[in-house]
Image 1 (cartoon, rainbow, N blue to C red):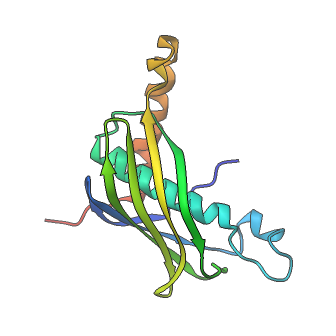
Image 2 (image 1 turned 60 degrees about the vertical axis):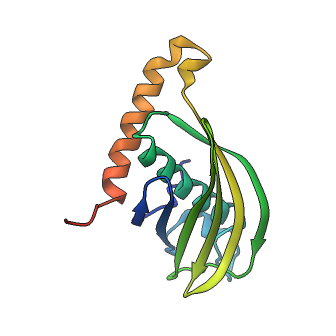
Length: 159
């Protein structure tokens, strides 16, 4: 099952920062079990929303040069409040350190202006073909799919 936890990119400053939103709906299947009678977004999915937001910043900055962006490390993760159905998780990611194949972000997610989650997230980027040339077609496929999804979540402001 694939979880898309970025509904929209609202601000993007390539190489520097990104702001995204995730609108939590009661229709999301995982809420049926987490928890019955008190539906809340699981903490691991809150962290995944941070990861996906950082990945969009990396892809946009690198012009989709890499097919795969993976979580390398999550440090100082703090959960401060719940995200409940009908609420919007606003994610802000700021670049702390950008290297050749990885990036570290200061990340926070808020609900109604109050902190819900914060962390220092390190993501690595790679192409599958770098380890196995026969994977080049998979890189092309993944990059194409990410470009399609990016066009749906990011509408640059009119100039």
